[in-house]
Amino acid sequence: MVGQHLVAVSLLLLLACSSQVRCVAQDDYVQAPFSSGPWGSAYLMFGPSRLEQRDLLISDLRLLAPEATMLDQDFSGFRQNVPWFTQATSAAVSMNVGVHPFRNETRRGPELRMGLQFASGLVGSLEYERNLRFPLDTLTSPSSGATFVVDSIHTTQYTFRHNSDRIGVEGSLIFRTGGRSRWSLFGGFGLGFGARTNAYTTLRKSERGTVNFPGGPNRFDGETSVEERYTNGGAVWCTAQVPLGVSFQLARNGNFLRRMDLFIESRLGMLVYGSSELGSITNFGAQTLLGLRVRID
Image (cartoon, rainbow, N blue to C red; front, side):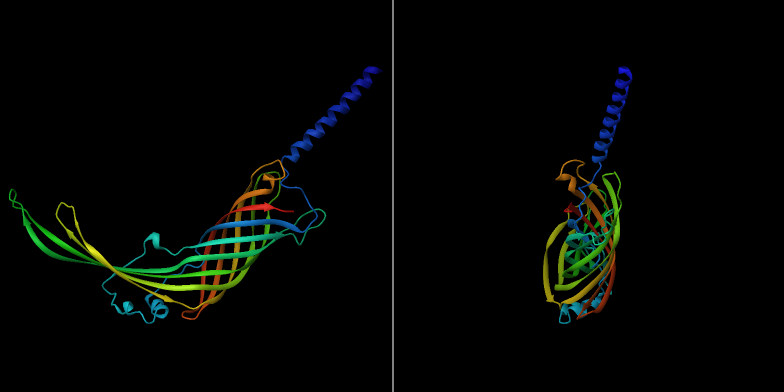
């Protein structure tokens, strides 16, 4: 009889221990303490933006800088350059706070994320270059009798750039995967609007000369340059974006690092803004933002 009681007690202890182990194991995967409050998370993110990018035409520049005599040049004999390091790119920073307006007793629901965004940098560029060769001298080898021509190369380069800042408010509805994994996927849609400020256009002309000796080295004959800058008018803007991303929880345990995620977010979107010089402009592009998410619920 005593043996049967011991067996029963042992089984009860084993069941209790196993259930406690399962609870502890499940707690390792809990992403954050669940709260009934409305708050969601705080976000700080930054990265390159090509949402403002557009191709500049010489006709655009004549509107942006109507008094520039540099644009009176005939560019038919020039080669248009589009090097990768001058492609239009802005830097964007976003600061958001999220709430859960659809939270109930059993689920959080999607998060409504609202905040500020600032973007600044190069909007568009255009570059022309021309190389003219002039024979300076003829050299003859005394041993072989071969003849070499010494050339003078005159390079003329025009670089045109348009920059601006963009500041405003934004909001997006974010849906996120759940489960036990520290990795999560998220996506949604959002809108934003604001002002476009500090717009300006720079025009630069540089000329340099080089003497090309056969067999080298070449001789650099100096460079001259002139630059003009023109201030452009401000405007308003609005965006429609589709954010998509992946995040990683920094820790499974504790109340500090467990609340933090590192994430990368790509925003595909459309930007519409007005310009006193160019009229209404619609751009399609993307932003790639790295960020930190801190759950405050």
